[in-house]
Structure formats: C-alpha cells, structure tokens
Length: 84
Length: 160
Image (cartoon, rainbow over all chains, first blue to last red; front, side, top):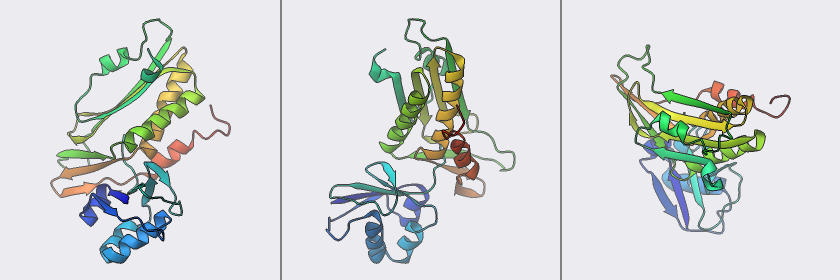
C-alpha cells in the first residue's frame, strides 16, 4: 500500500490531505504513481499535481519524479516552501 | 550536554522564550566563546491593508528531518558546540515570533556563519507553507526566487 500526502495549496485544490493506493507492480516510480492518480482523478488532479514547481518526496526526502518507489512508501506532493 | 541534545529542532504552535533558548545552548563548562541567534517575526505588510493573520502549515516528520539535516550540514562545515531551531506553526499575528535559530561555538566566525547558513537553508528547503488572511480573503504566500539563490551562495566553491 502506498500512502500519499498533500500539503498547502495542493491539498486545498484536491480537497484531500492524504489517501492510499494499493501497491501495484506497474507503479514503479513517483511519476507512475502521479499518472495513476490523475487517470482516476481527472483534470482537477492533473492541474494540481503537474503544476510547474510541484515538489515530490518519498519517505520524507525530496526526490525527482523518476525515483523508484516500493510498497509501504510514503509519497508527498507539495508546492515550493515558504517557511522561516 | 549529551550528543543527542546538541542539535535540536522543535516545531510547535506555542510561543517561545528567546532568553531561555539561548541559555539552553550553553553546556555549563564555558566552552562557548560565541552564541549567534536569529529571531524571525510576522511583519505587518505596509502594502497589504489589514493583514489579519497568517497560518503556517508543516509536514510532520519531514519538517523536523529537513531542519535537522541542515543543522548537521552546518556542523560538518563549522566547529559548532550546539544548535537549536524552533519554528512555530498554526495561526500567527503581526508582531508574533515565527522562528528562532541559535548556535554556539568557541569563536564568533563559525557561530555567525552557521546561524546565517541554517536560516538560508530553512527558508529554501524546510517543508513549511504560509497562508495570509486579510480583508481580500486568503492567499498562499509565493516562494521567492531570492530565497533559493541566497541558499545557493553557500556552495563550496570559494566560500567559507
């Protein structure tokens, strides 16, 4: 099972803070996961998750979208950060 | 002070006491010749009428990891004795404290540089997001290009 979390503007756009997705051997990367979410989610999800500067993280470390993912990973999508 | 307490980050809603935090950097052996600190406040924006409040969101777990990682990077680069970061989340108002960074070292150069470095990297990388509420409604603060480039100035080429 993948645990997927969203933050800030993306969370608001999707109306979703977190969800799960059954593990599937075809979903081997962050990009594959994102594509799968948008397949089912449609234009709203595509607009939110494919925005230019979206940041991806796997198990709480920033990664590029081609990074491999594994069962029980936590994948996060969030906008550029504005702390401090 | 045990090794575990040397580099500590806390994400919290509650306000903090800068005097106590600074005192917390000292181990009691007078090894520290220098303490450098930074305090960030919510500023009333003169262009935005009536900035009523700001809400700060974070990624529990990752925010702490990110800032801890930054402190470890600083410790690899400069001879630090201790470092501490506190970042508030939730609803904050103009004049409220948002963030505190403190570092101790034997000498001032390391302390000053490390404090600056930690703040620059926190601004560029730590998973936190600000939302402003004013008369016009709510809007997410946009990340600034200048924060990313400012963090870039610490690259190893020719800088100390």
